Length: 311
Image (cartoon, rainbow, N blue to C red; front, side, top):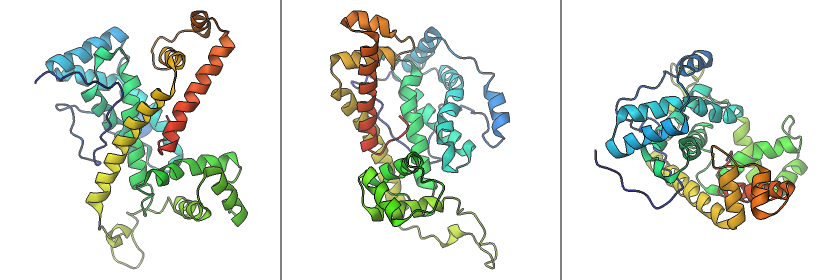
């Protein structure tokens, strides 16, 4: 295997491949996700956590020598983290094992592209891939009618549930006034909220459910498949562009001090204390905390505008 050239960008270039198309690293065997959560967690709990030094050594072996066993060790050591990320999406009514499997595919892609010479831990890089694969899967499978392929539709999909919870509107039938309040809060039209809410309320409608009085046919058999290839391409390209551009734009919004704080408080395995950063810039610990909070808000804002949630 040829050595890979160092990529000029720090952020991951996300390429979410259609479900079932992601090639494993070598013949990597992940634990079966057809079992119960309990059995799966018991199986992956035996994989040891790697130290920074161990991780770097394995990553360099794979990057420079194409050592597939090193890549497998990196994957196995981080399977528990995938479960943690997948748990953030537990309220979307999807089989958790399916969500974990998609996250595992994202982890594999991250390992393939990880550059250990950058100085970041693998998980700081892999989390973007894991979430991108999971979010892509949710959007494509959550409803009989696709949630939408535009960034605006994806943003509404991820924001509507949390906004309804914030406004105590999640447990009741919504009135016209409720829809108007939600639309104003989300910056979209009333009709957009009504349509998305309708789709989300029918999330438990299964494509594989047999239709009564129609032999063994399922709802899936009656769904037209006019633009499957086109939708897959749009979904893949939007995730790639959104995550890559979102991270780039977010970092560019930060000044030198904010970047230093984020890099040394968030994007590191050994974060500096508020006091240590305060001494560097001759400011109070509270002021450091305020700057960090404001910087994180800027970063999340960029991703939310692009329809990427949970980051």
